[in-house]
Structures are given as structure tokens and as C-alpha cells.
Length: 520
Image (tube, rainbow, N blue to C red; front, side, top):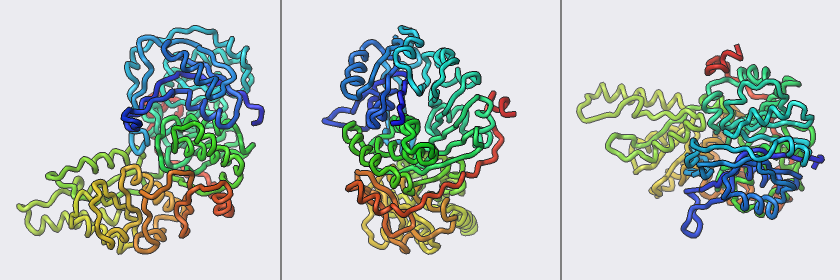
């Protein structure tokens, strides 16, 4: 594995998945840097853990880390007092905000126990990856001024104290659009300005993970950008998939092929999201590694973060003030979380009532029709068999525009309605997957690509997506293909070519606080 020796630095948590129930109890497992450890284990990479955790976790960390995940060494850099380091997770599949809550996290106190230089002397890593926390990121980095290996930082949480750091050479800065750091510091910044900002930070590569839309990288030495697609499977959880991506990318399984390493990392993330069983994860990884060249060339989902708002989504539904619209409200929040632009006609244009005259009704109707025309995708939510929603579906079907039918209460009982839509979904997560799939086609083929519009190429049943490694064969009659053997999948897609054009950056100049000052 290219003689990699990776030192993983960060905190250990207990991840409590409130929405994954087994035997009547919510699922819990070791989290924090253990997600990266699972990736190293699956790839047979030599690694060590340097961690912070409360006393009660020490035995579990050492036993699980060494006996199960085959860590070469484990170093306890310090302990966490006054907090249990338990992370409550309300929405594991990340169809929307994951609703993390670090129990008593703000009152945690960190006590150093082991000099960091001793860790370096004992393990001698080729690569170090730091997952920031409130344990003192800057202090760790200050000890690395003479370190000759590669330093990588996943700047997703608690990275305030290293935003100003520019003296230590960093190989890779990983940044996720799903992270609190991105939300707080970088969300409104164009990629052009992110490049300007990190160009002053002695960083070699900036890699942005764009959740289900793929990933993007800028190489400061080569002045070149790269991108790779995501691969959407039936998601059990999305917790730690970014950490798995980091390790997979660092492993350089595809050598010097940057886009290829990004594509491989995307596959690793997809596999990790489909199971919480380490052995199953390792088995699936092995199958991909054995056919890695075929897999990294497969097309997937590519929807750049900054481009998503350019594909407004018409929310067809009985969105009236006398109807329970909770399902619609939650779906809207999830779309906004992923940087899409949902449009709710009744909320924007008003609701018709019995006191209105014909002219007022026609004015609202005209505005709704204009909005229908402006939007490029429809999500029709069947709260009940609303006549207006059915008419809106008919309008989109006649114009060959993609329609995602969302049936949260399982009310659909009409064959014509079902076959007038592009996707039929029973859950919010399936809807989000369908949105990414549809927009990905549009990004690649242009807004007017209608080859998968309802009634033209038929309907995809999102609830039938297999619980296995799969790949969408875009723009072909072949839709979602389960991975049955490593040869099956590779053979089907061997001749597909991946488009690796650099993404076009948004030109927004709105920069928050000190970041604006540094760029200017």
C-alpha cells in the first residue's frame, strides 16, 4: 500500500444512532477517529491512533482498536473530563441535517497526558491526519514544524484556532459541505475565493466533499482543479463517511491519478454508508480494490455545490393552511440543507379562498404557471389526492420535465399517475437521491435533456434500490444495477467514460469576517 504509515489524531466518541433500532435499542458504536481507523483496517494500511477520550472509554478503545481494527499502536494524548463524549445522531442517513448533539460537549475539559513528540518518535508516520477538536489543534501542529512527512487536516469541526495558521506546510485540507465549519465560515464563499484564501495558507491541495454530489479538488502547485462523482447506494448511515473518504484518498490506491483517487475514495464512502458491519464493509472494499481501474472509471452522481441553486424545484402539493404539511416542511429543509432551491407556489404566490373574485384567482394562477415554467424539476408530494397537484403533474409530464413523485403516506393507487412520473419514492431519503440523480443528468446534458422524463423512458422505483453496491448507468435503459460479483459490475460499465472537466466556480464575492480580509 505504497508503504503508508498513517497517524490518526483526534477524539473518540460513542455514536448513538437514535434512528437505527436493533433488538429494540438504538445502535451505538465507537465513533470519532474510529471511522478513519475502519477505513485503514479495510485497506490494510499500517496506522496508529493518537486520541483524547474520557476514562471510561480507554479499555474499549484499546481492545477494539488493536484486536478488531488491527491498529499498530494506540496512544492516549489526553483525557476528556466533565463530558461523556457521546454524540446523539437524529438522522443517520443525512437526507437532511444529521441533528448531531454532543452531550455536555461545551463543558468538556481536556487534560494532556502524553507528549506528542513521543508519539512521533515511537511510530514514525509517513502521513498524519488531524481531525480537529477543542483539545488544542494549534498546539499539535506547532510540534510538526520539522516533520518531513505529509500533514492532512479535516477542517470540519472546531477548527477556529487553525484558520490563521500559515507556517506549517499542509498537504491536504479536507472540507465537507455538511460540516459546521463550512456552514460557519465557507458556505457563502465561491470556490474561486476559497482558492484565494487557502493559497495563503501553505496548503498543497484543497479537497471539498460535496456529500451526495461528488467531490472537487484544487491543486495549488499545478493550478488545476479535479472532480469526481459520488455513488449513491441504499444509505444506512452517513456518519463518518467523510473520514473514510479522507483515508481512501490519502492511500493513493490509483497512484498519481488525483481524480482516480477521488473516485476510489467516493466508492469507499458509499460502501461505508451501506452497512455498520466492519466485516461486510471490508469484503465489499476488497472486491472493488481487485477491480479498481474499472470502478474508478464508472460514472456516478456529480452535482457541484454552487450549481445546485441553478435547478429550482417546484414543490407540487396541497400546501394549504388547513392541511398538515409537516412532511413537506421537512422535505424543504432537507433540500435547503443540500443547497437546492425548493419553490412552494402557495407560500410564494398566495392561497385562493372563497372571498376572492375571478380576477384575483386568475392572477394567482398566472403566477403559479409562471413558476411552473421557471422550475426545472417537480417534486409532487401526495399528502392526499389533491386535484391541483394532479394538474401540475400533467403539465410537467406534457412538457417532458422530470417529476419525482413522493408518496409518504402510501396513497398512490393509480397506474397512469405512477407512470407519468420519472421517480416514485416512499421516503425522504429516496427523494433526495432522486433529486441528485435528475440534476446530475441535467448538469451533464443540459437543462433540456428529457430522455428520462415520465412517460418517455418509464419510471424508476426508488424503493427498489438494492441494498448492495450499485451504479447508475446514466442515459441508458439500464438503471440501477446491483453488484452481484466483482466481474458483473465491472463488465457492464467497463466501456463507460467519466467526464472530468473542471467545475465552473461561482463568482460570489461575499466573504465572512476575517476570511474576507485575507482574500482581499
